[in-house]
Image 1 (cartoon, rainbow, N blue to C red):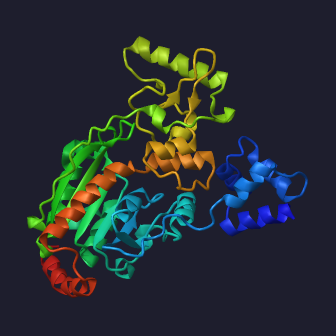
Image 2: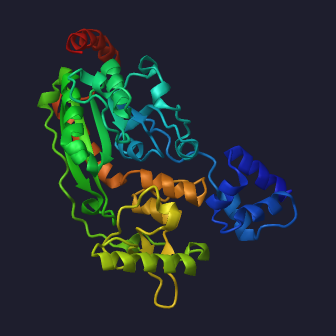
Image 3: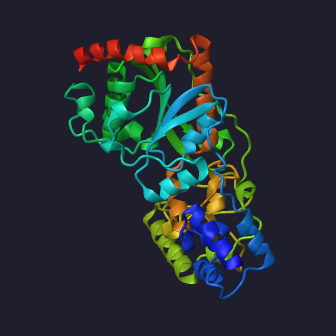
Length: 401
């Protein structure tokens, strides 16, 4: 009967055998092992069986019962920005994510399935909310500089943020992007974004913050753009970006004590890394793989391409053993995700998802500053009144755009 219990559990979770095996940490060929268990060809050990029974079926991060404000989560990924705001009293009333694997991780953890491609969603169908959140991908503006307001951004993903802001008029927003946005197209892209937000009647601020300055052992720099609706005294909101905590960081704090051998890189891959590093050295540049140990202060930035060869962050295992990649759980910790966060996908997808996500402690620090600043002025408005305001604002914006 155990085989049926295992199979039924997996099906309730809506996971493939490969995904469930990876989530259980069954190691290389874990899907074959799970298949044999489900077919009754073999049985898990008592410890393995218990871990299957204990695997959570209820999402650990549903919206809190008592909330201060409502928010929407655009380009949601696996919900890193949402998680930070939710900890401070936010209720997500809408989310959007086009990647099916990220959406699966999102649903398992938050109990909600995100809507799909935001470019295909009518802004009028999105619920009213106080704060818009969006870690949007950077794209150049094809018609930037034509002074047509947010129409300049049509064909980019920022356009979808702009049209939602125009329609729903949230009190505030937080946008997150790569540090390079600041200098993209010689700074013109950021100037256009700020100009459009100004035309939409928001007071906006931006800053580049580094994860390692907020207690996360990762040298991750990201630009954060924060804005407040001028209809609700946005220009008077006393917002300041958080000061670095300068809490000491150490890579050893995120490392697991026992790691499966599958994360140790092969001789062939390691020799390739060494060869390429030497070639770069001869050319006089610093490219190549990067090695860290438990006493390193922080790692490089983890990226979505980490699954390919792990070159940006390899962990030293001593002189007699090849270095290893981070495990998905270590990647989660490197971004500040809590231990309860469920990783229900393959290692490859997990690396992509955490590489694309955010350093949660940084976002939480920004969120706290935003919420405290709003509450000092007039607090969060009732959304019924909020909706009435939209009509007048729309008339004003029509004249601008």
